[in-house]
Amino acid sequence: MTERIILSFPVGGTRFNYRVAGAAIRDGNLLVCREDDDDYCMLPGGRVEMGEPSDVALVREMAEELVMDVAVGPLLFTSESFYGRAGDRFHEMGFIYAIELPENVRPGGTQPFLVREDEGHLLQFSWLPVEGSALTKARLLPPWLPDRLRTLSGISAHVIFREDRLGRNP
Image (cartoon, rainbow, N blue to C red; front, side, top):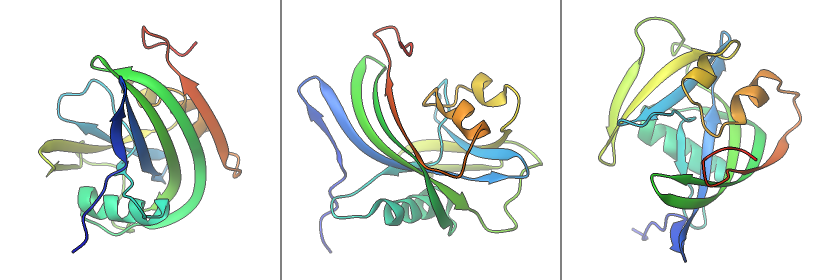
């Protein structure tokens, strides 16, 4: 078995992350993930490993987190994000793909619809309406994502995002 090398490491006072995520939109709802006691949510996904294509990493991450197979669709966004969380600074490269979940995984019912432990963290998966303010109220990060998901054009976009020291997008 070869050693897994996750592409996340400190450089000076900043941590570099290479992350991949999946946007599952079904019946006007988006699947989001909240970890432990975070006051924000994100798209399900995780870090890419050395030598691993981003779409393969996404399939692996979904199998680990959701315990289900997904079909990876088109690349929606690439992003370069510069932000801070809990006193740490991050430089993150991200790839966000459309994903299709198994047909029986649908919005509705009790939320979160799935709660799992993964690598020592409690993950809660919920469906939120894409339209309206639910994604913003849930603090879907990165903060540019809710508006971009509401206006998908079918053409992938590259987004550069910088938070200032107070966590705002200048």
